[in-house]
Image 1 (cartoon, rainbow, N blue to C red):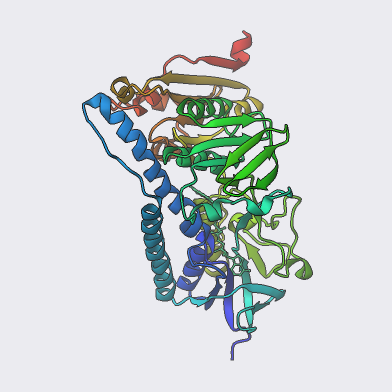
Image 2 (image 1 turned 30 degrees about the horizontal axis):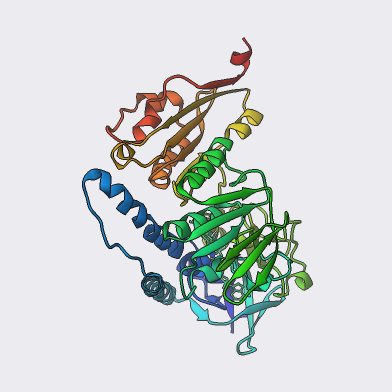
Length: 460
Ligand SMILES: Cc1cc2nc3c(=O)[nH]c(=O)nc-3n(C[C@H](O)[C@H](O)[C@H](O)COP(=O)(O)OP(=O)(O)OC[C@H]3O[C@@H](n4cnc5c(N)ncnc54)[C@H](O)[C@@H]3O)c2cc1C
């Protein structure tokens, strides 16, 4: 009889956990995966996928507006939130079923229960009380949205609830300055809501290039999203038919919904990790080495619970690397450098590599190529919008170390430019590439003179 019930027990059937479970099973491991909510995890059930579907829905309003300049008359366009949510739910259920089927096909046993760690090799399934002994435990249990400790916080929603509202709020106040806050502000605005975005910092999208941050905010404001910087919601008052978001400066903002998108905290509490000795860092994330091993040798962790880069493709890659390392005899580290990413705001953002500020801190010489232009489509639609593109180049090596795009299809563009940046493309390589005309992306290979030069050459 085997010493352990399973070779691998995965806590959490989200992006990272599912990939790790399937790949480990493919390497011959006996795998069980526990999921307390719905298989598919945040990305599939209440993150990337439903969000992108809502983003698509929200963009039709702009399409209808833009159509007039091209000769179209679009009259009588109406939007029905319950139809969108029902159709979205159907698609999410289909995906969830596909995840179930894929796990079953890989011979991974699914335990539909919350799992807690009892010791370094024992789990308990709370639904049945059953104990499972596992040679290796993988924490792939993600993170959760944080609510502030303010009076009336219980009346607020987070992204979790935003996907399930019974009706579209006519007025919504959102606090947050990260990509989720910006995306929800834009999508609710596109669907017709009156949106106020409140952020305590002096600019939204912290961590992004300063030009991107300023550009996105001014585009959002130009389209009608109210952005209040340097403020927080101090309390929420419930009234007969509405809520009042009361800001720290005393301003009252009536709203049908108040949403917080102020960050996500790794799920490290109440699953027995402290007792087993799994170390967490100051941000409350599980500390792991480059092979995703925690401070307890039989326990590994991947994805959002480690808070390295909280993105789906990163969790998937970490899960795959873990399974190859532990069960495939192929020790694999995940390279977290030059991860391309997008913000599905309106307009969209696509970035890879270093910001101008980060490059200046790391490179002796930095060349900035920057262009801002009115997209061709806007000439006839009359929409007042500008696309921003920016290349950050290491002046010593000519390597493109950063690329930042704000404009339609920026996410699609950055996926492809990400390959070039990852391969170490130089500015000369971009210059040698012929343009695809007429496109917006052609600007990326036709920016010839730097708009700024920092470092040695600038000083000469
Ligand atoms: C609104 C929103 C939009 C996003 N958009 C994007 C995007 O556009 N692109 C992108 O790359 N990323 C996006 N993300 C981030 C992305 O969803 C996460 O980075 C990714 O899902 C992390 O995967 P994971 O496997 O670490 O965790 P998760 O996918 O969160 O999976 C963890 C799973 O563990 C389960 N669980 C937790 N504790 C237990 C327990 N004790 N027992 C059993 N089960 C448990 C949870 O129910 C959950 O299903 C978005 C996130 C949100 C919230």
